[in-house]
Image (cartoon, rainbow, N blue to C red; front, side):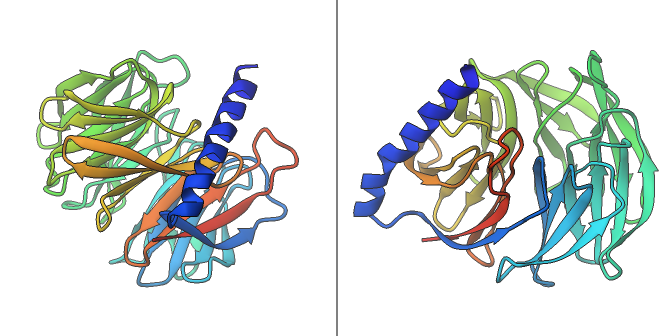
Length: 339
């Protein structure tokens, strides 16, 4: 009943936005849709290779990473051999892909010339989210909590040597969701879903330096750091909120309703917009300044279209719509152009 009510509310919310969108140019325009027959279950996260014109998508139940043409949106090939691919990052210097595999609790190294897995590192139970430090190339991978563990760890993988070089232990709760590292490679911000907090980790000392409670929000997923304005953007699911925190002290700046079942969020710096994707719609917010944010549109998408990535070089938002929980749902890759 709860899911049905949420679906009805989301649908009515999306429909109520349509007259306004008809009068003004919508912030996102659908330009391509690629059907994915033969697939089922959830899609998870994306990776992108702009120079090589490739988009990568984790297909969990299909046990593959799917490759698409960035310009046309067409699917070009599958990379197989995974148990449950989840999170990934492309390494342009070596033409490789790092992929977290929740099915066998490992990190996979993919050769993107041959499109095959060439190495694996086994970690603790619960491998899922990860983030790359842009400065030293360390890949921080969530694991070790299990289903009911009181704490978990971030294992540190050196992406250059593909070796585990350490751990950050004692993260509260059995798991976390989104993570982001600052441009200087000094701090990591993480959504601690088990305790409804945002944690801050000093990457030099590998210690927690702060934990900030989320304001009446639970199951936080996506996170983004707006460094020039010192703001953290967080999307929660219960209730579905777009939350802005001061990145220096964790104080609440703004909180607005957003699409439910959200999983990914992107910041369009050129337009000062934030895109939050979930089921049925994408919520679009505008940053007026560091302290002021407005909801500008709900763009219709598809059932459980929660995974997304914005590619500024192409001015496009890519959204994966899965069919988990709805037998007649259309699985597809949706491509939107920012306007």
